[in-house]
Image (cartoon, rainbow, N blue to C red; front, side, top):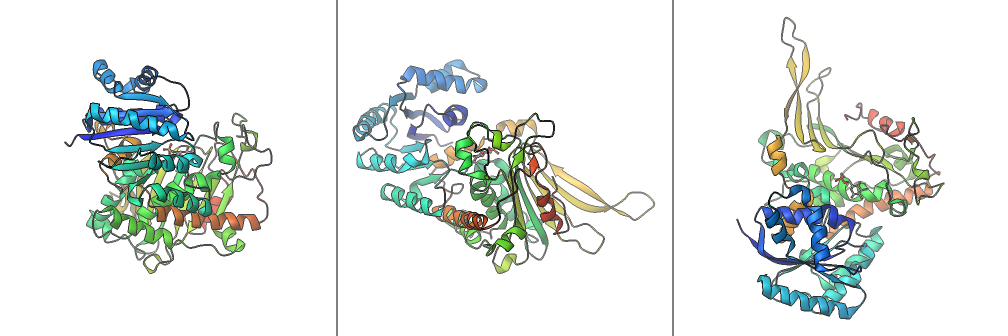
Length: 479
Ligand code: BG6
């Protein structure tokens, strides 16, 4: 196994994501020997922490995974802290000094990853200073990892892209969509293209429709201020849901190269059908906002902290999406996502057409979260004296051992970045087309009558209008 040499500079080392996900992901890569003695991490943030304090935080965030304390401490010893004001250019020179020292000490060959886990409004200033202060290496590689949201609409995303481009090439920018790190999302392409049985029928002639669901039980938690400007359409649809849709709908890439895969995804996203009137929007898109739960145990969105008491922000979204390409003509993709629904589940259902009237079509269900499973529904004759049909289920779920060995989403994505594999990161054009789709909906919502919110109780299955949307297809939501 190739052991990688690298120096990570993490902007936002004192933050929540670092403590919840990143340190653990890096530790698992260390435990699995992908990174080793030739690795160091500089944590930066405004707070005046010390190396020792950062190491304590790291050890605390990996504590449930430690089976050898000495080895874990050895891992933590690779972490260094430097307090840093992102606006102060001199401080980037200090970072550069420390980076050179650590590079010498750990022999990391000048490979540098810059991970920005801070507000996107700081991306341009940080990248500009990384470049301007000489912090970007000239010996190994420079890679930039950034978190969503990439802009708040197409205009702001464009502006951000222009600023980032000054300092980093497109193939040095790793835009994280953590859904692309989920095991059964990542394996969609193999499932589709390595099985002749699926590959040959995965088309408009055989597929009736597709359902993609990203349901959450949680509400907005303490992120009311962010969510008010985002809503589910920007928080989950613009990125995760459309990414999953593009993986389900894309044509087979000519090879496994990132350019080929991304090109096929872009082809789908670029051709998403744009609703062109309020009437068309209302026919095809449902928005919702949760009220208090029937038991009153859960409060309404409008009563959440930092949320306007008359907010019209949507916490639920369902849409019938068409792709304006001959290969998918007439095949709808239904996508939905919402907060405070009656369960946490991420699923894809591919509903195949029926062979004849009165016989249900086959269906493939892909369970992504929290359980992982493939379920295939077939028709089979009831055993006994009749020849009536019944639906049977063939299913596969990884066992506990496999689940435990499965890399977590951030672990998989950080490793991919270390390996220089852009496959599971968003290309700028994917982001831009995603925004175009969501911007158009936002524009039409502004022209449409004010929504009658709240329109679904917390911990329910969502607004009734979303059921009507799928019922028009002759189906129900499967989950
Ligand atoms: C994030 C959203 O991108 O994804 C959150 O900002 C959401 O609002 C989260 O809760 C869901 O991720 P997961 O992996 O828990 O399904």
